[in-house]
Length: 226
Image (tube, rainbow, N blue to C red; front, side):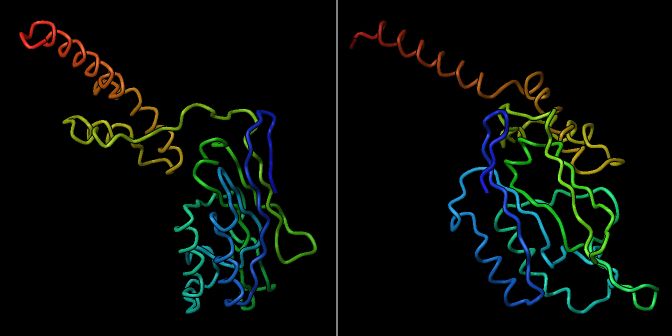
């Protein structure tokens, strides 16, 4: 489904149901391919994937069937998709009434492309209380107030050649908070560091090109072969 927000930004939303059958799920991962679907731009997929990313997302962490989720993890990696996380209870699917019969897993989630996360960086996913189903509904709140339509942050490989680069990283990274908070903080600190310490490499490039042009003109004017 194509979505257009009130800023005329387009993105794709796909609702998904992953079959309990491993064979059918593998076919689904193969079909959910950006090139096959002709997706150009941000996209989000949400629903019951019937798969987990790690053992912490299941009540039976010693289960021998976790290998059945390798295709799901590989598909997300190959498509460059990221999990949006959640607020609330861990397990979205539960069964059983006591400790001997209880089973639970995080089978429902929302995932998206990196460019969608750049645009809607405050999007939140909440696991709501289940009513008559053994699955709980998930609520996705697209960031409506703090959207970023500026040029996305780009890491510059040339930064690593500067003697103060690692110090900037160490000072910006907060070990007491999560990766997403560190990501935003790191990008902001590197932009300032790039401007004040490393100096903007694009500005330097323009200056060098200008100086080279002036030097060439002076050389041509003074040359006896001109």
